[in-house]
Length: 135
Image (cartoon, rainbow, N blue to C red):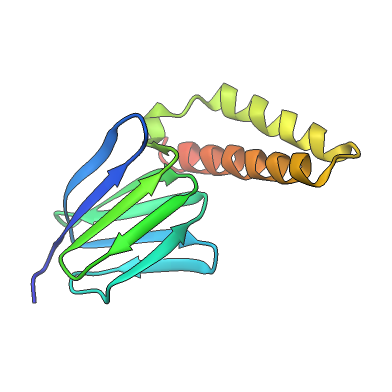
């Protein structure tokens, strides 16, 4: 069995990552999931949170937002709305987004606006966690 697999992470704006990986750990709506070479084929939703990529024995960490992941034994492709390295995260912007989302959640909102505010809050908190953990 191979010791690596091809990993591609693609957003609407760019190809965020393309290369060999030894392991990937990321969040799904059901919880954390790890991918190794030779993994069983599947398609799964991706949740907002960190992604950890083991490449050449080193761990890289980034942020992913909602998306989908297709896994085959030799290749994993992640299509996501946003992917950011810690140094790309604007901490002040993330704090402001967190404050706005928390403020909106305090008001009487319709179901759609409530869900959007919850999603915005989750993205902001994830950005702050990723940026603090790598500074």
